[in-house]
Image (cartoon, rainbow, N blue to C red; front, side, top):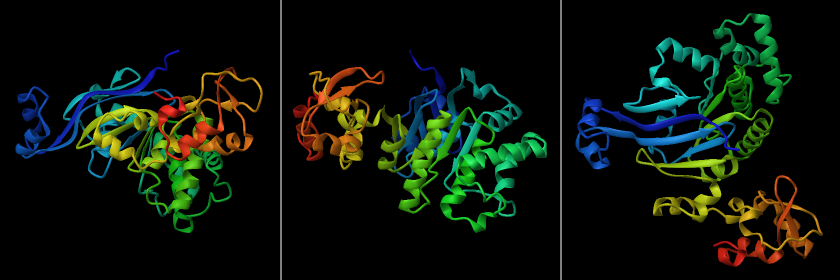
Length: 345
């Protein structure tokens, strides 16, 4: 069954500079990057087209200045696109009034940014309850809801702490809890973990995945870190100079990069982190032995298969055997052997 599209944009442009709309119109909405520069404009987002499916983690990534944060701000209309269409559940966001957009952000969108933006004079409980206060919810009801979300992100017992009394990871948990308090339909996260040290960042990624497994939110997540992207994403959009270069699963990006730029982006990523069992399994079906999930990453099952010393059955989400995997296939991936030797191609 096809998963419905929750949020989409079509032919979205964001040009910064005087006369951007007239310039775009005069060039039939298809100017080149050089023409934009020659006109003294900045092409922050150029002809972006994406579809974010319900319940997926859609990662937008690129180097600094690639346009990823600008695109997300266009998607939520925190900034106005120069041109293009924005649809949330089929409704045209660009036709919504300012007041309607305020209500949409209050009730349907959650946002978490790199800088935690906690209110220093409010406690954890008050920070998390703040958006509910803005909605007009009475104090008793909003505190009950805020306590539920605080418990959800693992901060139970710290309700009366102030931000200055929390670690960086704890402060980011407060930011996540605050954005979840409104029970958003779509959740925007703009490099939420990049200010954290590596160990806390890994911990927060684990926490994020735990929450997603429970809540099944539709998520747009920005990062410049490909390791983080492949760990979290269902699909990834790679941006360069304001344009989307390729949209694909992490595995597809590694196996079939659309451009040299994408290939450079992915070439240093260990393939065991990206490739699934499905991509390297043999078609021969084996019933005996511990069953291996076809969608598991090679990295997570490598030791189990190698230690077994035999071929193991591979199963789909219905636990039906669809193939097998052996030690040789795993080693070919781990040591960088040819993918064709592993059954790919």
